[in-house]
Length: 87
Image (cartoon, rainbow, N blue to C red):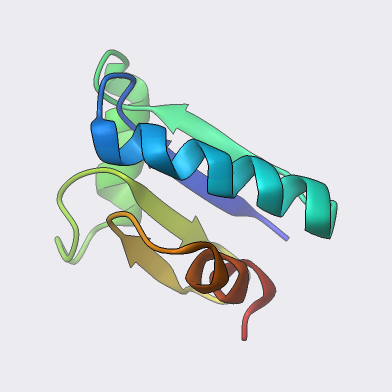
């Protein structure tokens, strides 16, 4: 399962999501691959490629490569867990 998170280091919404992502990794035993986009041009290009339809345009932005499901913005833990598990 390939779970991706695109974030900005100083983004307050991204900082709030850290707790949910850490909990998700512990509870489900999965790894969320993290890409900081505000200070890394290569990571921003990767984010833009994952958001080719322009539906998000910012961070936090989550992609489940297995299911194709994307989350744009901060969400509650249960929504993040559903995204990760494909439910």
